[in-house]
Image 1 (cartoon, one colour):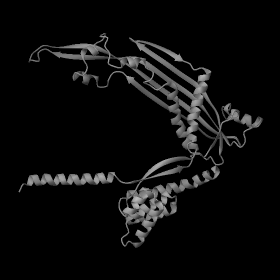
Image 2: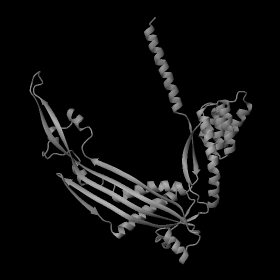
Image 3: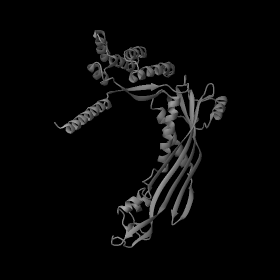
Image 4: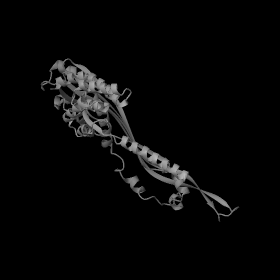
Length: 390
């Protein structure tokens, strides 16, 4: 009898069993729901929002060029028309975020486009009011931009070691060379102030000041240059200073503007990120969430839940729990998941509690209870906000 082989067989079998358990656990079925999150600030009574001015407070746009150690720097300026175009682009990105969940009616009118801040809003309200009727609030913004575009060359000093003959005691020598690596980079920072002001009475509902940064680079010295040289990937002629040779595509890096985002695209992307954060603060937002379906218990019900047939799954699980002598906690949990999916948080809380009473300490069941407690708190706030949007 070969004991070592038998031991190896048992170890292999144990490994395969553990692997199968891991794979089954890793492939747990999920229930995906779309939930509505309430606004972080109280927007009760706000239905129609006018889009005001998005003022460009400051733009610092620098272009740097370096050749042979000489740096040249020049500032680029936008015309009034270009600034207006940029302002409109930022405003459009902010509005697109607010329009994702249609609980605000957005109004575009010339009389609001000149409103820079709540001081001018107060003056306009006190003086003549507005011809556009039933506007509840005005959204405006202010923008600061810093962008630096660099077109340069990195210099790398590299030691190439040569061995003559490769025999013991043979003469070795080292050649020091310089290699030049053209690159382009862009570094941008944008600060955006967004303000939502109620008209009657005139007060600021929400104001946020947030910033985003972006950095990108193409070309330049490879991070693993020394390793590649040691492996013979680069030839001496391609690295030698003044050899006149370039890696394929270097000239494209130096001459092309397509390898990095242009100025307008960069600002648009940064503003969209800030707008998404502001939208979650002042508006009802939709969010997709994934909840785990308990793998034990009634298999038919689990399949129905995964298919979105929550009412039918409730019937199947209720019947199974009524008839079962040994009730499965996973069935109670999945029943709670169905009630949560249809918005009946009271019955969902009861079902999750029944599950954890049968199996105390189960993390999945505890997550369900905690989730329902949070949803109950948010639901009161959400219903109040929804009532004003209908």
